[in-house]
Amino acid sequence: MVGQYFKQLTLILTLTTGLISVPAEVFSAETSEATITAREWIKKAAKQGSPDAQLILGRMYYYGKEIQKDYNAAAVWLEKAAAQGEPTAQYILGLMYYIGRGVERDSSIAALWLKNAAEQEIPEAQLTLGRIYYYGKGVTVNYKSAGIWLEKASAQGIDKAKYLLKRINKRKHPIPRQCGLTRLHNVSGANPSQVTADNGHVSTLASDSVRAPPVKIMCSSEDGRNPAG
Image (tube, rainbow, N blue to C red; front, side, top):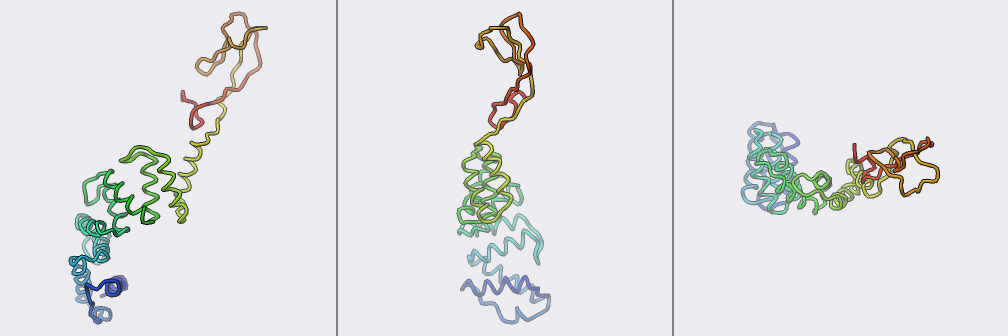
């Protein structure tokens, strides 16, 4: 039976490419033979070089839509479409390289395909590329580049990008937190320059001291946490 999925795909190919002309009976028939026919027309268009058909066929293999799931075959057709500049194919192929599905895992190649897709305004690619730069997966950690791509993804309505953007902004403008209270031991008339800090505790270089009120010691690390742990 030809489902709505296949009818939409074959209609898209008919309207957007001049490489195939799908017979009308493919849209009206409700037989398994018609399903096979539709699939063959998509394969035919893919083999003739249509990036739209290559993307569709790659996704069919990837998701197992009306065809046996095959990640290796999916990678083959998606790479053909990606090489012709098809942005969605570039995004999916980038993910496949990133997780090693259907291809050998390679974070560097993944980043290249994802960047191509991100530059063509695929929001999910922008989010993924931003995360790669943020965590340093296959590339050098780069919060500036991460912020650029996450901003683009966020502007297109990707809420997950906003969370990492907040973390990046905190790194730019850290808010020190209190590391706790400690007591300052000082001598009457002691020179303030003699007061030193050691392992989070404040002491003086003098021996005779009197008990003083507790004082607050502030953290000074980049993200507001105590560098010592």
